[in-house]
Length: 274
Image (cartoon, rainbow, N blue to C red; front, side, top):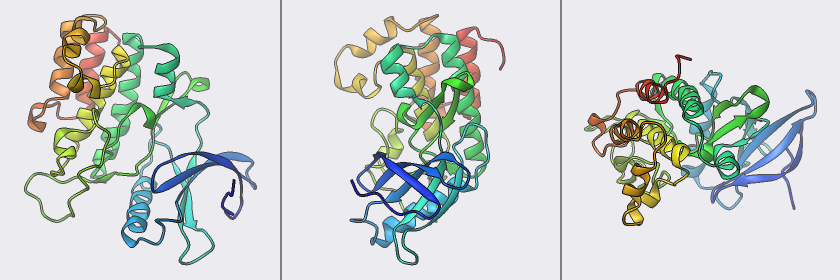
């Protein structure tokens, strides 16, 4: 397998990606530490819009400084000017939340509250910078078991500046952007999105952590919603109310911040303040 030649890096191999980008595990030769390198696939690297989106989201992520957000360490162009852009990210020793759920099954209420607290803090920081993550899913939550389950929000590949309804100063995002079941209805419809889209996604994450059921299945399988509600852990009615508000179709009816949602989850779990 061909791997890119990145200055100062020893690239070990491909570990992920999408239709437009590829992600590699690498080692910083000078510092001797593992890093993650993300770059555009050569088939799309010449598309000006794709290049600008990659560079824009990299700049957005580089401006964030939070203990629960993976850090951008550096960026550049492969082969010099005109080459595919790349970004070097902090490597997290662990796995993503989807892997944790696949291995362990649904999480205990207290652990869910702890995870949501960490992610809510990260997301509210993102929102304070005027950004919306727009892809909060178990795959984009990294968990470091050596650090007592420290969680990181990762992958700002489809992040955008927040837009309130009625604004017209920013191009409309693609209708397909986002993960079904997690993305808010207004996001999937290509309408303006603000921080409340991430509140919806965080609520969907609570649902899958509590039940192991992927949110998109609720709309596709008749009777599954009632089955899930009957099996929610702890005080099921309380959690059902929390999820109904967090994932409401109307953004104005959702929690106003991710931390407000986290507080409600912690109250349901009976967990003390973090």
